[in-house]
Image (cartoon, rainbow over all chains, first blue to last red; front, side):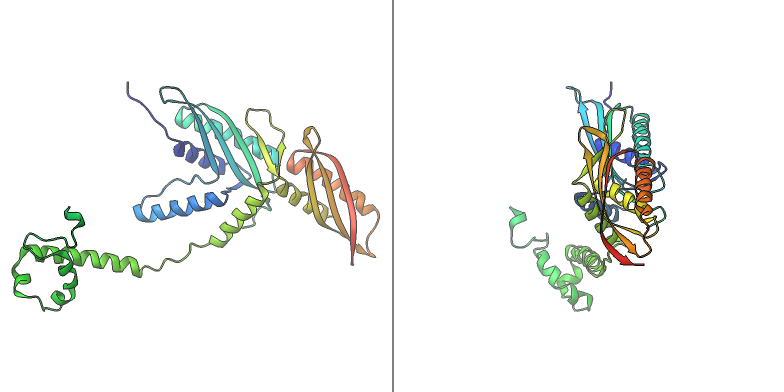
Length: 126
Length: 185
């Protein structure tokens, strides 16, 4: 029986990808620490020549069983959304989509998704 | 330890430091008899030339800031400000949905601005007591004088209430309007 280990950055990348595809979501919003992470990711991409998945604005906590397997994931996402859509509806849609995508891609059950809308921008603004 | 020795000696007795210093001389054809024949020195020269070219390339590489860097930094700073005051949004499943007061205030200010003769100024949004899904709003306005009509305030109330429900998804528990300035209109 081989071990299958899925690490947190993978969960974060899947969640980020799913979240930005939800209608009404303009982007994930990293804080200042996230900006530094993003700059380091860009530098690593330049050095290695391989694209790395964006995970800024996503935070992942996992519960692990005593044998080290991941039993549940708790996700936190920070978003900027468009003013065209109702904020509560976009947040609910992001939470459903992210939970379903992460479980479908990794098999890890998602215990909770916390969505924080940090800003609302008029659609079409840069 | 060889690693800590002042020079790293080649099998022929010369050290790499010397080979490095003499790179230009060798390139200019001024190699001495030993350097012309010794395979160790020639090997060392060849790899040092590669190293020097690579470092020169890196040093000459002008790194321009990526496009949109300032915008990304300012967005992160704005987000950091917005992170301080967070309201809960209605949400049934486990986990939470939250929104920054700043985001709510910008939507409500915009709604008030759509009323002719009224300009929204400051907007304070706070959770309404124990009810996590309702908000209290304190909105400061400037009105155009003499074009301002008293009915405009009723329109502001209507539009802000509608925006809270339709754009945010929370109930407006209390809306205080404070007219504290006029502008010529």
